[in-house]
Each structure stands twice: as structure tokens, then as C-alpha cells.
Amino acid sequence: MDLVEKSENVPENAPEACPGTDSDQAGKAASCQGCPNQAICASAKPQGPDPDLVPIANRMSGVKHKILVLSGKGGVGKSTVSAQLSYALAANEDTQVGLMDVDICGPSIPKIMGLEGESVHRSQSGWSPVFVEDNLAVMSVGFLLPSNSSAVIWRGAKKNGLIKQFLKDVEWGDLDFLVVDTPPGTSDEHLSLAQYLKLTDTVDGAVVVTTPQEVALMDVRKEINFCKKVGMNIIGVVENMSGYVCPKCDKCSQIFAPSSGGAQKMADEMGVPFLGSIPIDPRIGKACDEGKSFIEVRQTCNIPWHVCTGTASPARCSIARAPSPACVWTLQHSASVCVSHAPWCTCTCFAHCPMLTPQEVPTSPATAAYRRVTERIIASCSPA
Image 1 (cartoon, helix red, strand yellow):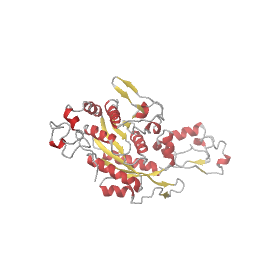
Image 2 (spheres, rainbow, N blue to C red):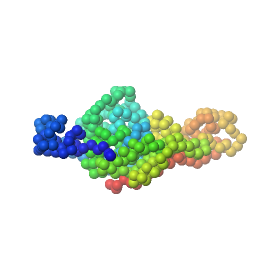
Image 3 (cartoon, one colour):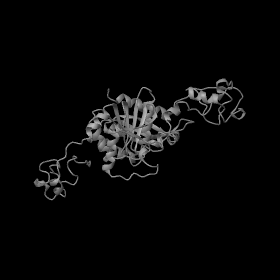
Image 4 (cartoon, one colour):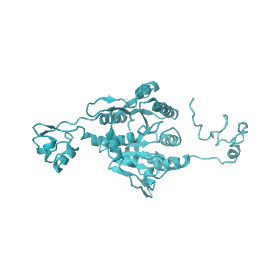
């Protein structure tokens, strides 16, 4: 049996026949006898509609597509998926993307996006988000904290108040996509988002992230049921950390064994789309720690070395461990070569090196997976 929060105007500890706090019979009906809230309900003034709902709807009217990244389980990579999805969407320079971090107690988006130490500018028209690129804006509670180690010790009401501010006060402008990174669970933050965004009529839905093992899938099933209960569309399920692909032999090893069939089987059983699997790649973690886009880095750096066509070897190369400026320029401006990692042979100038033959750069499994997932998410979004 699901434990579902009662209507907002019915206290959790109220009897089953509670008329609701906004009823004329609140605190007076026969069913109110013995209720611990009876005196409060009898004396409370009726509440009108939330005055912030209209400003939220107005601010969000400029956002075409809203995507929530959810999971019932912590540690499955929601923030990483949110960040890399945002980078992938923003790869098209004509697409305006926003990333909103509502993981209030554990905001990791500033670190992942390379925005540590940035602050939010406030003006009469609202809060200005922090820009990673011209078409990628970010807002996080991390920008409001005095330091990275500051703890956020808030109750639900204050968390909900900040989420409301992010929706109604941030100057997002006209966006094609707003990606919302959420904390794990199905409680205050999720209920607030579902309530506020429902009013905008353009919520495309939720991307649910999991890992293959059953201990994660157990909680993700609850998240899917939460979405169904609140009427939120489920764009699909992403299985993160789905095996480790060796960069040398391409053999896949299951680090987190899918003992119950994994995310695809769960998605099939629950009648929701499966968007794809993203394998473990240590360079994803490295990119996040350095605040870089993994997808962009991997487009030009996927092979361990270049093949020498003559008798030269890295040991004989004049600057084997230090690419020249010309080589670095080649790396930055060509998607077909890779000379960015020591100690392979780079010679003095790659563009004129007779000893080396450039190879086409294969796409890493993780990069290809992120691209596929992004394409399927874009395809699933309702036309605007």
C-alpha cells in the first residue's frame, strides 16, 4: 500500500472523515471530535489561493520544455546525468538551456559545472542565473552559501520557499529546456515542484535515474509510482553505471550486477519507456571534478595514441611528452585527431609530422549513450 499525503487542506493526523481546513465545518463537524487539530481548525481564518502561483506561471511561460531528473535512491548519479544532459542539449548553439538545482541539502551542480565560488546577482527584476556558456544558465542554492562546506539545515517549509523563489524570481528568460536536478525521495521538494509546475501546463515529465542493482530499483519503483500518483508524465528511465567498458579491449564488466534484471526489465514491468544505459567511465568522474563537459571532452579524445608509420617511437620523439602549440591547436580544431595525452608521440608539429598517421576518433560507449539518451528525451518532448 502506498503512503500518499492527503490533500493539502487535510492534516496528516486528521480522522478519515475530516472535512478539510478550508471547509465551513472545519473544527465543528462531528468527525472533528477528538482530533488534535480541532481547536486550530475552528479558529483559523479561511485561506485563499497562494498569491505566488500567478508569478510562477508568468515566469515559467517563457520555458518551452521542463524536464525533472528524479530518483528514489541517492547516489545513482542524478546530478551527473542532469549536468551532462544540459551540456548535450546546449551543444546546439541555437538552443537555450537552464539547469535548476533543487537538491538543497546537497547541491553539487556548481562543482560539476565548474561554477564554484560564483554568486547570484539580485536586482529589482529578480535573480540572475550564472552562465556556463552563452546558452546554458544555472541556478543552485550552492551559489547562496558562504562556503562549499556550509550545511543547509532547513525544514520543509523553508525548502519549499526557496524552490518557489527559484521558479518565480530567477530571470530565466526564454528557454527551450529547463532541466531540474532534484534530491532523492518523494517528499517536500518533489511535491512542491509537481504542484507549482503543473500550473504551467508545459511539464514534459520526469527522467528517472537508477543503477542496475535491486537495492536501487526498489526505491526507483516508488519514484515511478509517485509520478503516477501526482499525474506527472514519465519520459523514461536511465540506467546509470551500467557496466564498465574497458577502454583497451571494449569488454564490458558488470560492476553492479542486475540481479533482478536491471532497469530495462523494471521499466517494461511498470509500463514506462527505457531511455538507455550509460556505462561507467572513470573520465566522467574526472570531468565532473574539473567542472567540464564530459561529452565535449570525449569528442576529441578517445584513442590512446597515434600509429607511427615509420621507425619512430615515442622514445625517439623530440618532444614526446609535450605537444607543441601547433599540436594543441590541431586538437582543439579537429575532431579526427587526438594528441592531448602524454606520453604518446606528438613530434614537433603534428600537422607536418611524416611519422604519424592520424586515426579517426571512435566515440566512447558513455558518450554515445549520453547522446542517444538526449536524442530520445528531445524526441519525447511535446511540441511547443
